[in-house]
Every structure is written in C-alpha cells, then in structure tokens.
Length: 273
Image 1 (cartoon, rainbow, N blue to C red):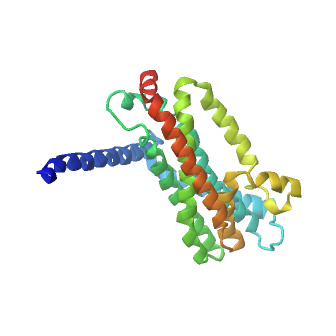
Image 2: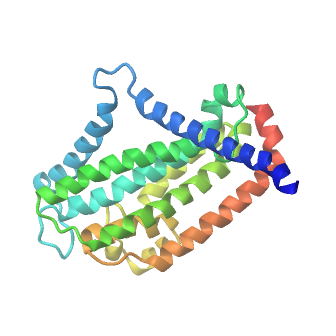
C-alpha cells in the first residue's frame, strides 16, 4: 500500500520538474529570438555580433595597432589573449546584470503563473550559454584559420564555464532579491561590473603588474576563470584548478546564504513584484 501511495507524489514531482525545464527552455528560446525581433536577419545577428567583435579585437588591435603580448612574437597573440578574456567575461557579466533585474522584467509571467523563483532565472544562463557557444565556435574557426594551436587543454573549458556561470548565478540570485525592494541596486550592479572588468586582467597581463597589485588581484574571483581561458588559449598550460575550486566553494556558500534569505523573504518578494 505504501508503494502505491508514494507513486502519485513522485509522478507529480517529475511532472513539475518537466514543466520547469520546459518553461526555462521556452524562455531561453524567446530570449534569443526576441532580442532581435523586427530585424530582417533576426536570430542571425547572434552570429554577426560575435564575429564583428572578434575581428575588431584581433585584427585591429593586433594587426593595425600593433599590440603585442609580452614574450610572444605572434602577430595575433594579444588579440587572442584579449578575446579569450572578453568572451567569458561577457557571458559572466550579462548573466549577473540580467539576473539582478529578471524578477521585475518578467513580472508579467511571475504574477500570472506560479514559478519557482530560485530556478526561474536559469533561462538567462541557458540563453547566455548558447551565445557563448556560438561566439566560442567563431573564435575556434579563427584560431584554425590563423594556424594557432588548439590543444587537449580545451577539455577544461566546460569545467571552467560551469564554475564561472555557477558563480554568476549565485551573485545574480542574491542581488536579484534585493532589487525587488530597492531599484537602485540594479544601477549599483552595473557600476560594480564596470569596475570589476578593469580590476580583472583582460586587457592587460597579470604578470606585468607590480607585486603589490598582483597580491590584491589574487582576491578577485573572476581572475580564476578568466586566467583559465587565457592559460588554455594563449599560454597552453593547465588552468589553476585549485583556484577554480575555491571559486566553486564560494559559489556554493553564496547560493546557500541566498537560499536561506529567500526562504524568509519569498512572500514579500512576490508581493513587491
């Protein structure tokens, strides 16, 4: 009898999970298509923008401006270094900034159907992952076209990206709750991300900084995953896994704290939305 009594509950949980996943995928699809709604080329712009960005960073900075990476004679070395940091940073920054305001921007959905607010913003991660994959694919094509070496180290990319987006999700979820109550927090996030970008070695090389600056930047969690991509594509070395592990632990701790706060504020969050 007990087996039969548990079956409906289990079936209901599976059905609820499927609905949540279905909603997340549908929202991600709409996010990609509606981003360029009304444009003749539509979703094709998802490919055009990354291509243009890579051309600008690599060709203009390297070939025209003559920027060089210290210790490398390759014409494209600095451009590759720059793009290897810009692509993941864009995915990370977009995820954080968009998640911080997702409850307000999607209130027309949240107020009409009951959704789990903890997993609802996952559609942003899915959308940004698709954009990241497309952009990285174009980057790979460029590397092959220029004869740059692509090694087995690319196997670490999924791990780095997972930790990076988990960290972005934990920040976005944490901040998103407070944006509901105080709209100015959204603008503060934009300012912090701007400063954070320049506090991260993306357009400059970490090793050329003074010792005191290196000691300060080591506490920047973004350095762990950005340097990971640069290690793979530029320096052909294994990324700092222990450093990435610390960011993973930090992400889990932040998620637990955010969830603890959410369980006590959920009713107020829904009311304010």
